[in-house]
Length: 297
Image 1 (cartoon, rainbow, N blue to C red):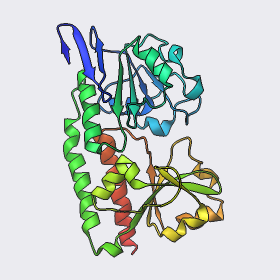
Image 2: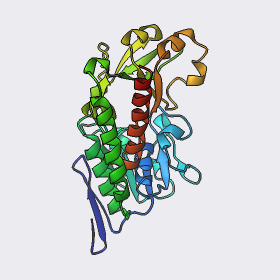
Image 3: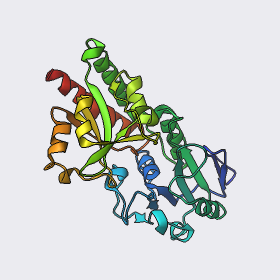
């Protein structure tokens, strides 16, 4: 809120970020920047995570125009000096729960917060898509955006479309959905759907989300490509981020060809923008795949 020349925002860690005026020059984690862009807020700079390289991941950026926005680094090359280059008046990051700032070393986050306001929003499995959307919309409004009210009807229609598709026919005939991230030429990471907010939302809308078992990770189960066909997924949500093994390098691989044979592939960004616009697009892509899978049954 902004009153009497001051600005403040209570983030999802319970930290109150304050400034003498509304911030106009925000540096953001790339997912947060893409989310704010969908509300009309243009970041002044972006940073990535340990999984990113020397430049911004265009998949994570989604509709965010990268030209003219400084990329400040990622991983070990990302420190307080790099983030504060250009004198931003706000830093926006995300957390996957527990208050730990994702993509920033704890000491770096501490030093940043001593110098400029730091807002951290929770995008973890403890939040629904609607709750995450609402928090980014609230932050965008406090930064001067008008909001995404025009997207509420298209989003509701996309959700209803998916719900209707999931309700068609008997449950055992519904096309199974599997989300995965290509790990290498030899195998993949299969997503455990209830660990991912967007996948959990698809399950809540009635889709048959395959839930791989095993592995020490709460998010992924590592398998060889030869294990994927046995899951009989009709729809594959495929991680397209820059840290995933590129699909162009897989199409000549017989194991990959067998894994995707007969399935409908949907591009998946596990770190997609937290906005009504992005979620409407994602739901409609999945609904298109469900309809196509049904038409081939």
